[in-house]
Amino acid sequence: MSERPLYYLVSTAGIPNLGDELIAATWVKYLAEHAPDADVVVDCVDPDAVVAPLRSMHPRLRLVSTLWQLCFRNWAAGLDAADAVRAAVADPGLAPDLRDGIATLCRADVVHLTGGGFLNSMWPAFTGLLSGIAAATERSGGRAAMTGVGLYPPAAGGEDRIRALAAGFAVTDVRDTASARLLADPAALSCDDVFLYPRSWRDEESADLPEVMVSVQFTLRPTALFPPGAGLSQPADGPAAAARERAAHRGMNGLLSLVSKAVADWGAREVGVLECWPEADRDVLEMTRRALPRTRLFTLDDVLRRGFPARPGQAWFSTRFHPHLLASAAGASGVAVSLRDDYYGTKHRSLTDHGSPWALTRCDVLGPEAPAVPPRPVAGGYEPARLDAHQAAKRRVAERIYGFGPAEGLRPGGDPGPAS
Image (cartoon, rainbow, N blue to C red; front, top):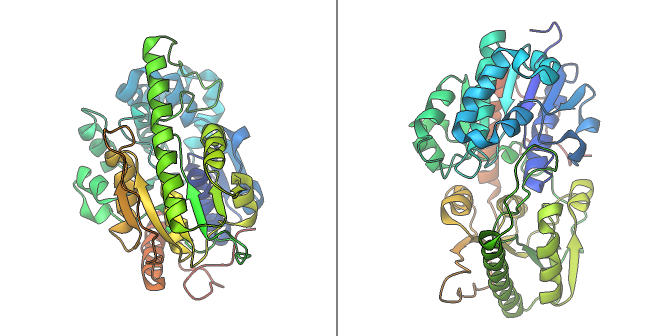
């Protein structure tokens, strides 16, 4: 391990996507607050695509993509990518171009897999992140930690592997009840990593924000999920791809019809439309803005520069998870719409089961019947005491990982001011 503390974060930043960027920023902010003199490495999907202001948040931060590249190179192996990644970390000669990156990983004091919903049946090769961290900390004697992860739906036959890998971590923390059940560890449950600073990301100049906000996504995940050049094979053209595309557009039209009816019923004069994932959201945002009356677009760059556009009194319609979390934390009312119950439903329920008063509805846009239009929500967002409790729980997890005590200068509620 290094003379200067070295903290190594493994993060989904660099897709880029709002929730993933904010989770990375949350932990970099925490380390800047507690360990400004430490070396901090963020191992992310694509360093060139990171849009969160990570470099300005910590003076000794470096971005790499080592474990992610090992997973991408073993994509076709699925769950067995875990074995290949472990082998490469144990013997860097198997990936000579990543030798320096593996050496850095293997001298870290802490290797910390930050949260998100990427360890599941949709992306089984990412079990390699767990096995790579385990192999690195076995070599270094460092501490392995995972926080705020969602493990549902698990890959078929992968439950035992995930449990075995997680058992070797010094700190294991998940954000939803289903994931804690999978690990057979109720004590592992806390909440999403963004609750470490639940108030910091809000737009402080919120008086002129629209009264109704919409955050929707394409109803099927994009073909090119990760950046070009990551080594992933793309689905071939042909009847199956064409059928998938038709189903996606039919689903999107059904979802936009529901949004249009809801916005009309709610009497909105202006609608804010939120961009979370620029590459994946381009088509759906264009379709949404055509389908709705007067709209105002909030880009991912806007949100990361100015803050999240939520305030009390708003009504939100959101299929996405982190807009639900952040808007409810700001006091806004909302309807959370689950497009896939085992994945999105699990994520949204992790919020509603733990204090978000938002309505939760399942939207089968490909079903035989049109979904019912939800009434305008009026219940507001999280009670301040609930936010404080979630933040305290996440702070306790952070202290178990890094050993820092409470920082000085926190304002009431335990949250410093907005991120710069």
